[in-house]
Image (cartoon, rainbow, N blue to C red; front, side):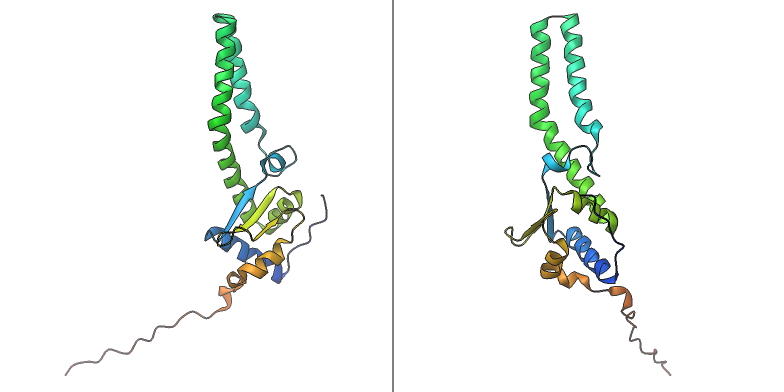
Length: 171
């Protein structure tokens, strides 16, 4: 899992550019295995997002138990945990997906690190059956096969010159 990451050559940079363009244009979708990507050791893991809400619910419940009633405090804890699983987990998953997408598209080295860690799947928006899962799949081959049209290097193309004709002067 901690294999040496080599610096990208020109071909790797073009493939990476195609990956980021496809993600930006929503031609490629990113899916996560939250049980694998949202744990300690992951480059996109944030422990405060996972632990702080549960700690807050528990402390609030204990405060209610001490101030009012044991049954009422336990009901508040159970109710908040149900709210957590139905609402907050979806919000957390969305934030994790956006953070992962941002980390993946920020740098080639980050992309390689995240891919070696695993827990992400690249899926074609046009055909959901076409995908590539980390770390076993070859994301570079998948991008070349399905998104090679994004690999063009626009920096080397000459700028379009305007075909302006000189204005004729009237006598």
